[in-house]
Image (cartoon, rainbow, N blue to C red; front, side, top):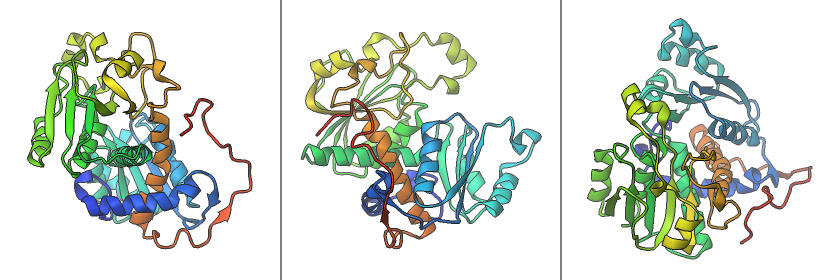
Length: 343
């Protein structure tokens, strides 16, 4: 892994497998069974110039679980960038304050520009419609763990991605990672105008995967192993698109009825979150809450050990972090959520 994590293009299968092996070693710390202080004294700068809850806090927690501390900046309003400061100047200044930086920015390529000015590790927390590498890594980690749980090989799996495949940066990164695996059947279902970019389709096809494009979920599918749903990224629409967009119809809803009709008891349902649970939003349905096929909370939980592993690799402590572990001193619940599925 290079000193920065800006794109999943930096990673091959060996690098991913190594990272996931580190993440598995991190799990006792991430699951609040062990305490580690290997990054004590280190400071993370979390720079989110676009709205975030899960990603920002997940990075914070991952760094703190390793003993570090965090400085947070959110939004442009209170940033020096609002005064005209360049990304390069901001990066160089903050690189002098912090030992690692995570950045989210609404402009494609902005995080790479930011990273070019410093030698401390920079992690791309999302650059507009570009990529979200740490999310894709935790998504793939979740898929691999779920397939281990149901004792099935990932090779040959049928994976369906649906929603906003044009502006959804999580699917852009994830489909690249999936394409590194042995051939799969990948079905893409998107509303008109929100299809997966052609270069990504070409990449997947060139690597030998079976690719299928649909414009509705109201069709007959081969048995689906993984559903990855995404919300519509209206914040990235042009004014013309906003005026013409009428919303997602019922034929794009992933709900219990769809799973019972088209899927199996072993189907894994994922979503990068947030999901819009308001009536008429037609995002991943809340009627799946409590269904053991819904993996979205196992998915978010997996974000902690994976992001801990990213920090460990970028900061060079992957061989040292588990030398001085100790048990936690507080009561830790057996299950985090009240309706977490038991397996």
